[in-house]
Length: 355
Ligand SMILES: C[S@@+](CC[C@H](N)C(=O)[O-])C[C@H]1O[C@@H](n2cnc3c(N)ncnc32)[C@H](O)[C@@H]1O
Image 1: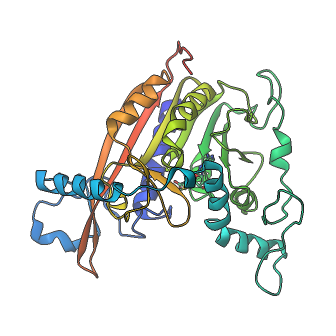
Image 2: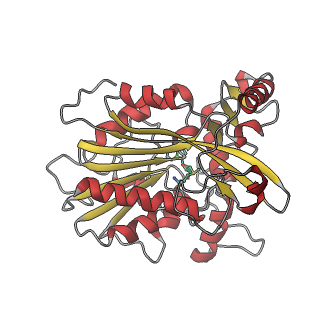
């Protein structure tokens, strides 16, 4: 039953991606939908008849050309003194969330005549809007004990979405979970504005959901629930923004949160995705790791790296595939190879903590 629920949520989630219902930088927008994975390009002359083709095979020439582009755009790297992690995080919060901040300040009625939201002059606020942030207080101690009460403690099926953003998948998931009494969804993001936005959505209810501010890279931060209580974790397009040197620790920490038998569902950028090839010189931080113009970062994974990382955390691989698609811009008559890595990793009944 638990496995059925997880598969249903994952299938629905991936379908939302495919339908463009979950807007994402790597999605092409709203398209008519064919069942996932079923649109195969057999006649190259028909390439411009659809926006997306599944299971594209790369020719050796195409792969060699992609490798060459990556070699070229990796030659000039961002200088080490400009690669300060914390700065990047601040920059992300202050750039990517600008739109959200404006929408939110409108909802709060804090927008000023100049269109900018009111900000606190408190030291350390760094110009962020002065939203009360109860999340930080709620779980700033060691977290709830295993036997204590915590949000979702009465639930029989618990999911965590890491890096939920403004909730593009939170609400479709909550919708699916409606059919499963006893389900509870946690979602977190390190951007407090995003979490506030999720919480202010009309469909948000504390009876079935708990959104909280959390940086998965911060080992010292407790979660608002004990270890070993989650049936599933969604880690979708988040790990790629973490520094490669910190990824393993993040995966270890998340693995601790799972119940024995619980599943971690992963999807992220794959090596030689068009997004990687399009980086200009001077954007590369380290091998296959880049910084975008808005300060957000992106790593491009291989299937082998994903396998090693999750298995190193003691999880068992149930699925690990490279999703190769051809994205078509029919108007401009251009095609782009898209590459994503997708996996399901299960915590064994007898899990040995390694991290
Ligand atoms: C590309 S978005 C993906 C959003 C969502 N998972 C989806 O697939 O639609 C990445 C999200 O991860 C969040 N994020 C990045 N690094 C994080 C970290 N260290 N801890 C928590 N959230 C993080 C960002 O703020 C952003 O909302």
